[in-house]
Amino acid sequence: MWTVIYIAPTAKICERIKEKMTEEGFLVQVRAISMTKNQFEILVPEGELEEAQEVLNAILHRTSSDY
Image (cartoon, rainbow, N blue to C red; front, side, top):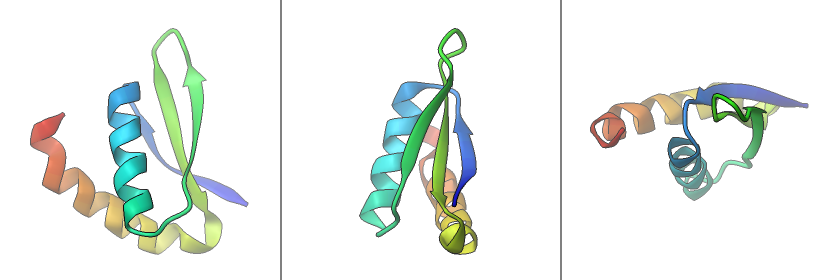
């Protein structure tokens, strides 16, 4: 089962996070949830949730100035 770990506010942020998570070895899916607001869910397999959240937090802290 896939679990949402983040809702990205733009397609650009979504793509950057997906790219970095994939580089770290995670399987990642992206799903548009609101085309009018241009929001996207980032999902990972449930079994990788804890580790993925740790990596996501590191990615967001490292690159927060880019957003």
